[in-house]
Image (tube, rainbow, N blue to C red; front, side, top):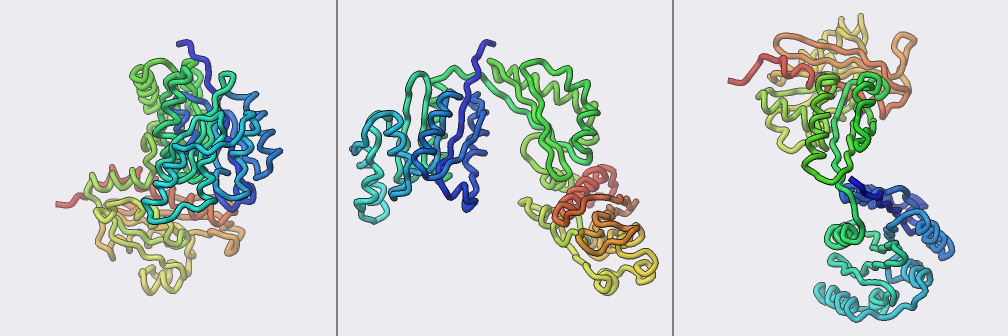
Length: 423
């Protein structure tokens, strides 16, 4: 293996990005696709609709990287400066491109619209560029190649840019540069913090070969591990990363719930479906967010029957059926209450499994004994009830999301032990 690292910079042009009026989702998608193509994104830059700033960004990027991918600023109005700036940067004039003009004219005709003088100007391109056809819109892309460096300008509209990247830009970049094969392997863990996980797998991580790198990608309640292998042969790299994943299973298997891009709610759904188990939920502090995660999975009606959200004391007693003496003695945020909630909702819905949440999401409602972030969760089936006390954060939204993830993990941990099956 003897590949030079091919680097890229993503340059986004437009005031709307800097003002926060539009979220730049293009850069994330492009980074993923370029990584799969063996091209390493080393910088992402955003500049406004100012000629001087655009020209400076182009010059700086040319010094840093092999490939500069530009999005935005290709519209037909006066504030769209990308084309004239690129023409100035590369020292050539704008000229009507007859092929681009025919494509733009056909685009408008197919929609029963007349080509205006303003839109006609979208076919005027720098003479020193190679036109890139836009199959999804009216603004052509542009390819510049100078001194071994490539600049590609594309529309900022996501579906237009993605089609252009997939059909032409990435294949042409791979032909232009000698890129290595890159294989990613994602291992998904839950129920263990990033630092604790790092300590647990330290010896395994330290033994990784030089061409395979590990990244920690934490989120609320979860940590993804991404192995990135660089080499010459995809089959060999996949075999290596699969073997390393198998080793990791023996070290941290109890925390690993899946691989790839499938989130925890999908994996839990698969477990429930395969085991032919049904689920009902009583959620108080999570206010329906747990049910939202469950029902975001297509086909969840195979195992999910329904939810009660008994938020107040009164509804917990009258509608769900928690005994008043339990609430009076222990309070809503307590183990006895959460046990009753999980058991009762399972009985009411006649499901194999019942789960429940009750806690102090914040910012109010805390006591010295029960600070904000105190949450009880429970899992119930016909043989057992399992509870967990969580001490989370001062932030309400984080507490709601982390508690919901913790319940999904509780289901994952216990569903294999559930002996109840449909007949």
